[in-house]
Every structure is written in C-alpha cells, then in structure tokens.
Length: 499
Image (cartoon, rainbow, N blue to C red):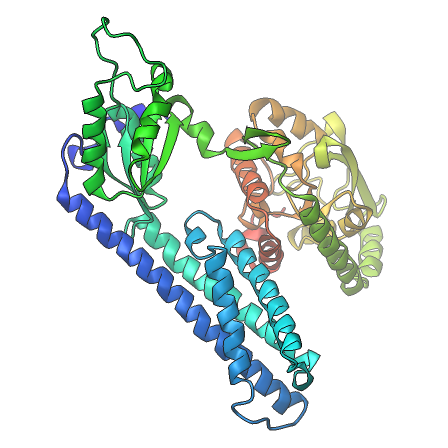
C-alpha cells in the first residue's frame, strides 16, 4: 500500500496531532465499552444455550429412544457443570477475545476443540465423583453432539454480528497511540481502521538534539530526556491499549530506548518499520529451531489438515461413484452413438507442486487437443458435440475425475487444473499464478462456484480466477470445502460459462 494515496484525505479524516482530543477519547471509550459488553453477552448466551442443549439432549434421548420418563431435575446439575466447564475453557483460552483477529473458521474450530476438552473434563469428573453409573455412554455422546452444534451455531452468529460492527467502526477493538512521521501514521491508521483499531492520537518521533557537545549515548533516546518524559506524560491520560512506534531507518538506534520509556505505561508497545508495513501485514513471528524468524508465507495445509482433506476426498469420491454408477453405463453408450471416438479423454495438466498429471473426462468434443495444440472452448464452439454440450453444461463430463481423486492426483475441492500451455502462458503474466499448485487441483473450486469458469480470453478473467483460487488456499477449512461442494450443485453461478 502506498501511503502517499492517503495524504490527500480531507482534514476531518486526518489523525489529531500534538493535542488531546477529548471527543475522540470519549468515543473510543464508548466503542470499547460496547465491545466488552458484547463479548460478555456472547459468553453468557453461550453458557445458557449450552446448558439448555445438554439438558434437552439427555431428556429427549431417554424419552424418544429409551422410551423412559426421567426425573425432570435429574440432568440439571450435570448440564450446568458442562456449561460451566465450557465457560472456563473459553475464558482460559481467550477464545472470545480472539474473535477480533481470527477468521471465522479458526474461531469455530477453537469452539469445537473446546467442546472436546470440556467433555474430557466432564467424563473425568463424573468418574472421579463415582456418579458415572447413572450416566450412559450414549447420553454423553448425544449431549456432546448437541453441545457441539450449539457452540458452532452460536459462534457463527456472533461472528457475523461482531465482525461487521468492528469493520464499520460501530465498536472499537483497540485504541492506539502512534509515534512517528505524520504521513506514516496516516498510512498505518487507515490500514488498521478496518480491523477496529482506532487511532486516538499521534506524536512525532523524538529526534536527536542538535547539540554535538554532548556525547551520544548508544543505549539512550537521542532526544532531550524532558521531551521523552513529557511524551510519556501526554500518553498517560489517553488510556490507550497500545503504543505503536513507526520507525524509519534513521530511527532504529533510538527505537529500543523509546520503547523502554513507553513501558512505563500499562500498554502493549509495538515497533513497526515504516518501509515494511505491507510485509508485516502478511508475516508472522515464529519459533524456528532455537531462532525466531519472520514467516512471510506458510504451507497452506498442515500434515494433519492434509490427512483430514484426503479422508474426506476418498469418502466423497467413493460415495459419488456409488451414486453416479449408472451414468458410467449410460454416458459411454450415448457418446458412442453420438460421435466417433473414444469414450474417455485424457489430458496432461499440472497438479500439486506443478507435477504433471493425466486428468480423465468423458469426451465431449470431436477433437482431443493437448499441449501447444490446445484451444479453450468458446460459446457455440463447433468442436463440441451435441451430447457434449449437455455433458459440459451439467458437469457430467467431469465425473471420471473421481478416479483421479481416488488415485491421489486431485481433490474434490481445489483450483481447477488448466492445460499445460495455458499454465505456461499465464505463469509469465501473473506473478503469483503458480501458487495455485500449492494444493491439489480440484474437480470444483471457489473460483468456479463464483462464476469464474469457461474461456479465459483476457488477462483480467484469469486474474480474477487466480484471486479466488488464492483466497481458497489462504483460507482453507473443512467448512469451506463443504460449502463449495454444496454451491457446486445449488449455486447458479457454478453453471455460468458452462459450454
């Protein structure tokens, strides 16, 4: 992001400097108060709903399955024990406070893992207290499923409420003081605003004094000590959550000492190099052996996530072949009757890590082009057979790729594989194009269900497709995969440009 683009903002939108604006401080306090109240309300709501879900699950199981009528008060204590454990886990792991910085799927996954932890504690508790003899395993399982669904639903709703409110500025997540060049402060403030971080004041970075008669102190701020003390005193009444020091190359030597001075305040102190704000936005500080590094990109799927995704792929592929089995009898006969040529079409495409794979499809054209001879299909393309138009419009021609999934070459969901000639062309025109191959290609994908399929006769069309593919890679979750599978069948956009 080029901060120069923010220098022409109207005066009313610029950051206040060198004066304490009480109205901003009050407004920020109100916004932060709203956030605290909403988080408390969210946690309280989840507590009550979990207790109710656990109680109803146990009672309904006995009445509908076991055909018994238990004492109405029998499961009240246990239900509140489950909800209390859930509340303690959420508070202890700071799950609700992290809704400010986590994407939806991470927030939901933390809730699911919390439920697993809660029932581990619960089963251990009833065993230690010797009350497990009145508690069947089926009851515990039914309660666990009910509580899991309740937690996921509750958190999905609260996420949908809180995130737009934070992004719109209705509530503030954190209040920050910026120290640095006004232009750099303006850039940082504009970027942070969308995440609910409000800049309540900005100060210039204290510069070295011009008096050369006083020797430099390598471990001290090169400015009048009174200036630094005054800066700390000015920051104190603002009651900020964070102080962010934006440093240029010439300020590096003074940054640590200034940060040390700011530690007198009850705030988090951050140092950000102004020339690398965009870099810092996509990086994470991680432990690498016995060192600390700044990780810019990471492998999109952990080994555990790959195992989960592979298991889902195999299950869905087997189920898909079982359901569509009759089509593998009818379609080949129809292809043979419609036109000359083989039933299946195999084409070399790039798969995971740019490795070549052979993709299998029902033949829908009179030609089987590959390599440099490949030409994308266009609307009313004469090469497409009469039956082929129907197969392509309904995506039935893609069904044989379920075998590619079972072989491990493809996934059910992922970026669609392109012909090798297309890959080579666009890889030279789009810098991040090859990142599409950091996961296995899919039969369907995020770009396809959003209408970006078919002919890519312009660079802009391919860029939009790549943007959606990279979004999928960077935000992968099992829930997103399931969403795309459902959209493949029921979203109108999934059938756009199907010719």
